[in-house]
Image 1 (cartoon, rainbow, N blue to C red):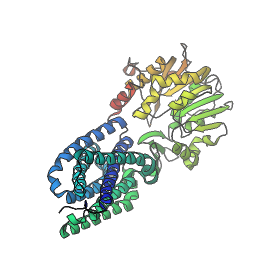
Image 2: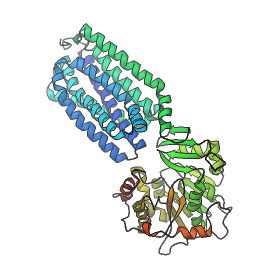
Image 3: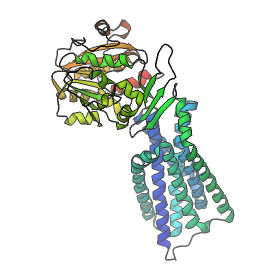
Image 4: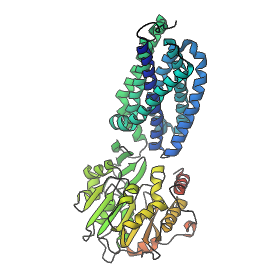
Length: 522
């Protein structure tokens, strides 16, 4: 049966309802895409790769879906309702399912491709069916109808693109955000079919679609109620020790774990993970932070800049020097800094360094901040996340280290945490090469940190004269680093000798490629 609304004064309202459904469905479809990309970025860390896979597969599947919709056009209304309910259920549960596939089944890659394809297939079938439904309300030329539909579709996509990062993630988080969108998707499709196109449905179709709507609503509702417990249980599967704190900030997933007690240690092991990557273990973090900070403190160190290190542990080591006047800490994520300020064990570990009056914290992107920085510092400590993601790889480039040079006072030093010269030698030596090509004389060195393995750093100074790899003349009491240990740290064994690898740049982030290849499997 055709809905003959053309002769009625209400045809404009019916047509507007169809275009509103297009608008809402487009917004929901884009949110599903962005949710898959964001989840992959959190879990895998490869933002560009995840976006390419998701968008490529979904766009291809949308084309297939448009072709598949051809034989469904004779029953456009019922087909559209079924597609929307299926899309709402699968899209709403997609993040939950993929998270489970990652944590429990180790099938994230195939699950991502399959999910993206199915969602794209369903999204691609929407527009042809909506075109038929729009024409049933009032005949239009093909060009005019296409213009109306695609205008609503593109504007809806804009809404979805803005709602995902600025509304859904901050308010609901990824799991519940996808469920909310699934519910909106279902309501938009069902309301349109049961109002404007009710006359096209037989009693059996109405009953079946009504029952399907109830089932989809119950499943999404059950998922909403159990989402928190599911996330806690699934997250724990990813970590060896009990999770004592977990949150997803605007930038990353932040997890603290704490063991009951490590054999041979008097205290439990507190560990911080960002997007699944270990940042420190309380049992041996002092080895890392002493090696990072104290060689750079040889010489003037009144004013110190710390890039990253929102946990406050590098600042703790710097503040051991009573003649330090100021510490400026630039870390992107305020959630990490806030956790370091309020979590009792973390505060004890960093000795409440972030509440010291000499410390100024700026929650800004280090790259952007350096471009406009006017202050000068005696020491710059770059304790940044590893360059295994697109967002962090820019912080290990020639351009980044070139921005560091102007903020160094005369005689100033730079130290960079540079990854493992054992597990990731090309990454390590590429970072060292990048620092050199930015106009620094460098001193590479490495120490053993049991939680990380063999870990490397680069000490550098502008110009042609490399700084001396030694402790300050009167260092504070240290637990690990001695003059003898530091002297040995500058020697590399034959199987990990210097590699002649290219530097990394913004337009050619080689360190990102190296890091992904070398850390694969660890």
